[in-house]
Image (cartoon, rainbow, N blue to C red):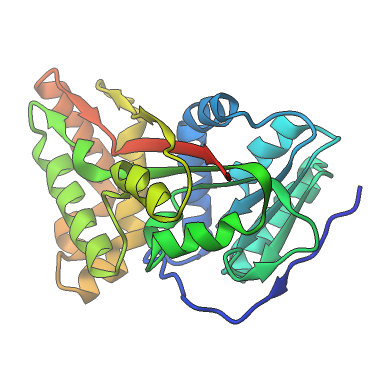
Length: 282
């Protein structure tokens, strides 16, 4: 199987990823990916990702979405993941080699700005369009990499669903801080529910959509650790923006405090909604 290398065009835009790409952040992305994997798998299968396809993964990070796509397309298919961060590409490449995954390759660069010598059957991404300055323009440019009637499939957050019932103060406070920090650095925290309009504005047919979210309570609910890891990644940005301080966040006990509050009230916590949208290039 031949993997085709992308070449860079003149760049019209740059993305800013507030948490950065430290080793800890790449570890966090993989931990988060484990929790969201069933949702992304169901989205890809419902959208029509299947054996033999050639897939472009936008903003590949540590490679988890690309590995899922590689499993779905099988040995007769191929996946190319691309990310602006060299650290992410290096981590994803090392993980692919360690796992013996031969039908995936990772490139450094923004896939909206790269040129490839063959079209793709599908362009996919998870939690990446929200960091583009202009998601509509990004979708337009990414669609140029598709064959006729190729699929475009994205899954993005909407933070409107991130709340607790009854309200758990520590969870609610941290979510509010995350919203402030991400918005201040240009991220679009409600892009999930805006994907319908984004696809239409980019000239694509109206997308099909689905919504998933993590919901649960009890002492060992995975969202407490996910929130604590996000807080750790965003803390330098939140302190720089004077949103909060390390003392106020208190990372060492954050997950436990959230759990204590939820358990004490017999409550539940919802993650941000993970909104999937898919359409085909007309």
